[in-house]
Image (cartoon, rainbow, N blue to C red):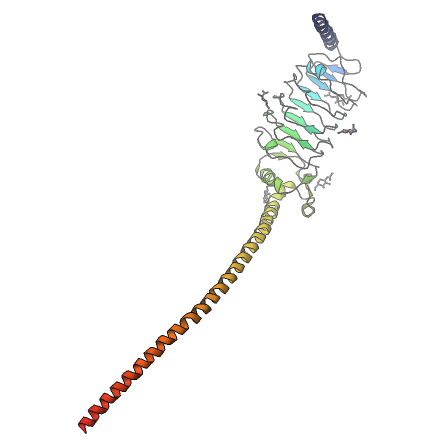
Length: 311
Ligand SMILES: *[C@@H]1O[C@H](CO)[C@@H](O)[C@H](O)[C@H]1NC(C)=O
Ligand SMILES: *[C@@H]1O[C@H](CO)[C@@H](O)[C@H](O)[C@H]1NC(C)=O
Ligand SMILES: *[C@@H]1O[C@H](CO)[C@@H](O)[C@H](O)[C@H]1NC(C)=O
Ligand SMILES: *[C@@H]1O[C@H](CO)[C@@H](O)[C@H](O)[C@H]1NC(C)=O
Ligand SMILES: *[C@@H]1O[C@H](CO)[C@@H](O)[C@H](O)[C@H]1NC(C)=O
């Protein structure tokens, strides 16, 4: 067991030195180098070159057919400041950027990324420019994906599969100046309401704003996101009105119905009360009338007495 562990360590050390010597050699064969810049763009590379000098500051691997980023080899390049991986076929970048914490510029545009989660870039705290445009399968960005990238000034999210973006993903980046959200099929529903207000009020530079438009609902298809504030406010309010209308109708009907019933009951009561009391009152009135009549007779006789006395 111990033997095996020792063997493993030795194996790892050998691999490490091999990688180190390989990495620290001069310019990779197919690439061109200038100072600390290694340029391997358009070299039909299938794989990430393993012989890049460890002190490289700027690495350009644009326009190749690289589909996989080897985490170990990439993270040897701890001085890397500028990394251009645009126009490749990279799909998976989970747990990829660990040691390259000095990275200021990262271009992953025109690849095949599908998801950015909260740990994809969370160690890249020096990042200033991040390009993720042209990833048509990139349909989701977790809302805290850039929480640690507080230095981010430029973020490119054009031509992706995004239809929705939580406002906090971008609104809480204190240094953001340029944001590209163009040529995405934005779903302009009430859930994006705050996003539209933020776009309208923020001082950011929105790249290609005229082509940053809604896709659905159909009534606002092609309308720029920056003009959606009033539109969506009305849409969401009228939705509220519709709901309110139904609610009010129900309440109104309830009141009407109970009112009718109450009036009917009251009517019945009044009728019954009247019927019950009327007979009593009638009796009383009859008695009163009788009394009056007898009193009148009495007075009459008295008058006649007086009259006869005078005569
Ligand atoms: C890298 O080389 C390509 C040509 O192969 C060139 O077009 C590009 O400008 C170079 N990039 C840098 C950063 O020097
Ligand atoms: C891109 O990734 C998807 C998986 O999300 C895969 O099905 C597809 O073949 C990939 N496309 C390319 C061009 O590599
Ligand atoms: C980055 O974010 C993680 C959690 O998402 C946190 O633990 C870490 O302290 C943050 N800061 C740095 C410099 O990594
Ligand atoms: C914000 O919205 C108002 C009214 O819809 C509009 O007149 C104004 O141009 C918008 N501002 C920006 C920066 O888009
Ligand atoms: C971008 O928007 C402008 C102005 O609305 C339009 O003229 C142009 O054709 C659009 N570009 C594309 C590629 O659709």
